[in-house]
Amino acid sequence: YSQGMSFIVAILLLYVEPLEAFILFLSILHSPESMFLHFFTMQMPEVKIYLSLFQLFLKEEVPAVYQHFVNEGIEPDMYLVNWVMSTFSRT
Image (cartoon, rainbow, N blue to C red; front, side):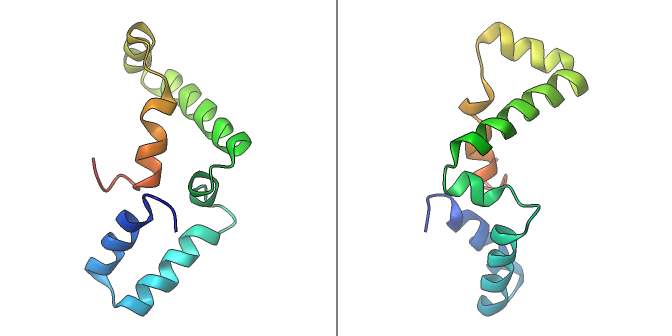
């Protein structure tokens, strides 16, 4: 168990039975395309790659927000790790 996992499980339990929620949760964590396991185990090299990619995409797709964050000194690690770990369920 890692902090933040309960948010994902809680959302799943709203829609499916406990056993199905457990299976879905394991599938989310262990899918080859999933970034969640990297965040929950805090595998820093992988997490840093995701943070860098997010910043690059933010700069390309929403340059005004990117520039505002730069001006204010807001780095992706200040908010993105929490967002990912809670799967946006707390925002």
